[in-house]
Length: 112
Image 1 (spheres, rainbow, N blue to C red):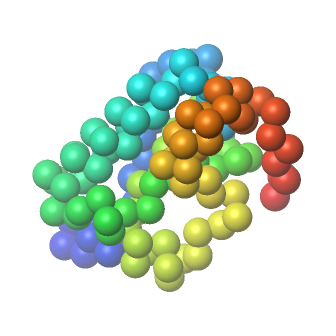
Image 2 (cartoon, rainbow, N blue to C red; image 1 turned 180 degrees about the vertical axis):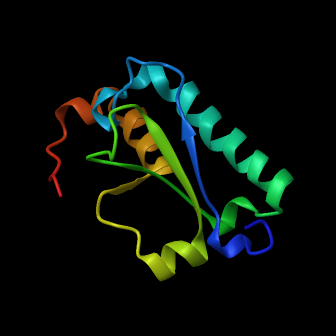
């Protein structure tokens, strides 16, 4: 429903088949992740007029399907639906990998 952007929920699905989930990510993927964030926010601004500060951008772990994808949703929808504990903010993911290139291979993560 393009008339009610507060219900906006989009997915960016990565073309690469070797990236299955958050645990697949390392420093070799930083440009890809940054591009997904920047291009996703840009497209949603152009198409729906939603600015980046009104978007929640995250990756689920465990994912709903085993092919890396990134969720973009309007902050109002996130607040009403409740972003789950499975959600890992994409900006935080990028920063974690910058701090430790294999962060998601070594970090203990609770499965929910």
